[in-house]
Amino acid sequence: MITELETKFNKKLDGFGDRFIGMLQGFSILDPDKQTMTTKEVCEQYGVSERKLCDMRKNGEIPFTKTGKGKNSKIIYRIADVAEVFSSR
Image 1 (tube, rainbow, N blue to C red):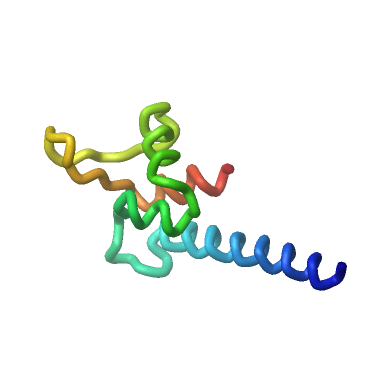
Image 2: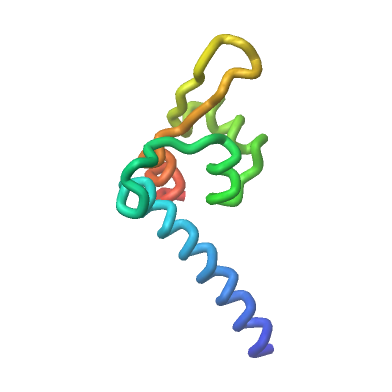
């Protein structure tokens, strides 16, 4: 039972650490030159699927910029915006 609790605690702690690092990056504390993230980077960093992120864009939950007009246009997110959205979840 103690091992199970320890495993659960470690998973939660790891998730907190990832979110905290994301917030630091979002406010340009860790990498001041990087201002945007790709869809793949957001999904990996915050543990959401591309489908969920797409739904968040459609619902207006997360700000983004789309470059170009075609369906294969690149979508980018400001790191500060992403950190703010996911810190409130």
